[in-house]
Image (tube, rainbow, N blue to C red):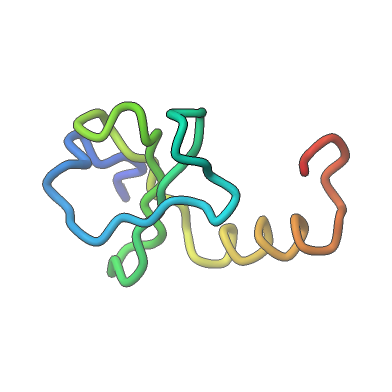
Length: 75
């Protein structure tokens, strides 16, 4: 069975925040490119917490839906 979480996300390096994030500590996510098993996603306020591991096809569909405005209420 494939793992869908990374228990301690701080063990990975190269995280990047959303371009929509601000520097005032607002809620945001961070993603990590180049992971062999998918796209790790974590809460920036909890860098040592777990990260979700999203499959590449699912992540690509999610990003495309965001860009196309298909997710109501998400800016």
